[in-house]
Image 1 (cartoon, rainbow, N blue to C red):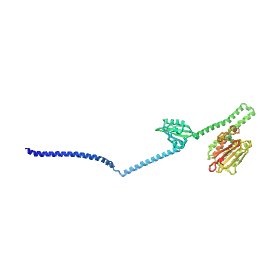
Image 2: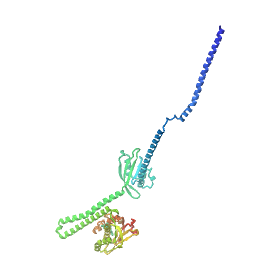
Image 3: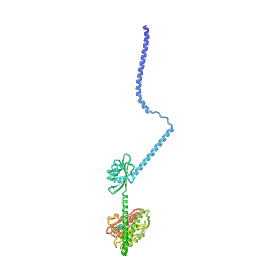
Image 4: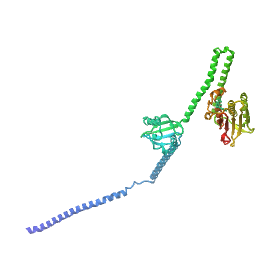
Length: 445
Ligand code: ADP
């Protein structure tokens, strides 16, 4: 029967429906849960990241001993760094001081020949006052000197960075011409070069003077030697047989031999003063000047009376000074000999000695002779300088007398000066320093 079947069927259908509903509800609940959880997760994800960042994972547990070791190591590293920094600063400071105070002029230039750095000596060498007038400019803008430009190009093109190039250039400044020795080396890296310039003008001048001196000495010695050889040859060639002529030739040869001796003596004396030069080594002793002056005048008396030139002198008895007696006496003899030699008979030579207000001493030799043209005065104390060579030789001069006087004055820490009026006479004055070392010039008396 269908009725019995229905309730069964009914309950069965109901059960199936309920199951269906349950499954459906579960399924929709699952979907809803899934959607909701995804939304929540999406919302939660950044926050979790933030939280994770603000709360880093906990450090492993560190013991106090380990912390102490880390701190000590940190301190050690900091100390070492600080020391390195101080050393670097000190080195930089030293380099800066060296660069600034170097006597040599140093220029750092880049590959475009622009001056990147110049020390004060370089600024001065280039005839400028301020560093800004040099740094940042090209070498060509700063100094117009073709040989220098060529040298820089040569240094910049050098492949060997260790090779130091060298040249000598002449800088024509506003005051004087200067001879400069330049050493250049190419800088490693982006190019550029360092130039080190040394002003060798003084050395060059001394070298020229030395060459001139050697030439002068050779010439001065050659003249009497040639004369002696010539007269001796003439004697051998037959003049010996003529006693009168032979006697004359022998006398001339003897004269020249004496002259040779005088030149050699003067040269030896000059070199002795030069070697002993400097106040300490020349040996100064405090002594009365009067006996010294008297001896010098006595030595010149024979020549003075021969020439008919009286010599008058004045020196107060108590006047004392720290001097090298024999040298100062020699200087006075030289001045007196010249004064007598270049004066006509009847004219008087006067030697005066006095004390300057600063405690120094002056000794002056005045004559009424021929005088000296102003053009000669600046070179008068040079070795072998003569205003009239023939006259000087005729009178037995060596051309070294005044050079010796100058060296003696300088060896005493003093100086010698001259005033002269052509046709009226000359005054030579030696000024020796006082106790404070100041030398009072004769014309400021
Ligand atoms: P010299 O041996 O020739 O005299 P010096 O060095 O003593 O050499 O002198 C150099 C030159 O200075 C002399 O040749 C002379 O021309 C000049 N001279 C020196 N003293 C006098 C003087 N008192 N009057 C004029 N001329 C002088």
